[in-house]
Image (tube, rainbow, N blue to C red; front, side, top):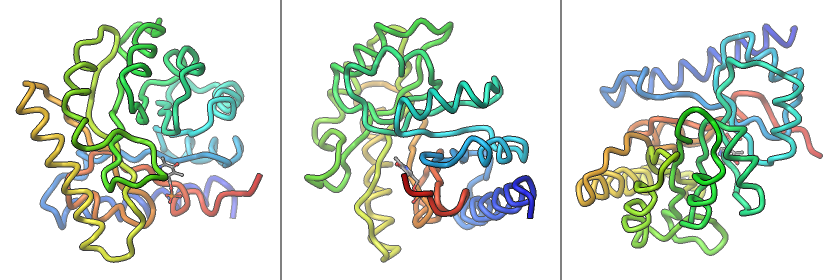
Length: 232
Ligand SMILES: *Cc1c(COP(=O)(O)O)cnc(C)c1O
């Protein structure tokens, strides 16, 4: 099978899963955008997916992402930074991505805003450590509201919502609980501070259905879209 045929088939498979999950939740599939989580995947493969209609790519590592942006040289792709953000990388991240999902402290948000030279505000999501895991980045749920309020006041930055990576769970009900908590948190912050955050970046290969059922607006899919990640 050619890369293009493979990409078309895989894209179709994931879009069908998204459509089915949306339908089961009485939502429109157009409310959920698909971000290809493309870390470690080759430019060749990604260009086939772009040709097949994938419009959004999410990358975790800055240098790898910049190399891919150069090689693919395609202005139609919307790039999302979905990895952990180090403060010395904020200048490049602010200027080479449309969306930044992993903001987890004010210092990072402030630096991104200050460095943004793009024509439009940088769209960011606050990463919340929804299951309070020691191993994960993200702000504690209890501290998220105040941080959103501060971030929303930054110029050149547009706070669009929350991003979560829940604890891996095979039980669908347990998956649903973390996602529902994220949705409730977004809604309560919006209400408390008069904000209008629309987005919830949540759902990966193994839990996109549960995430969409609980209101996800952006799923980040790697393995089930591109195939297994090649090792380094
Ligand atoms: C790798 C990655 C994904 C995709 O994970 P899969 O299980 O391969 O779908 C999603 N989000 C983030 C932040 C990732 O690093």
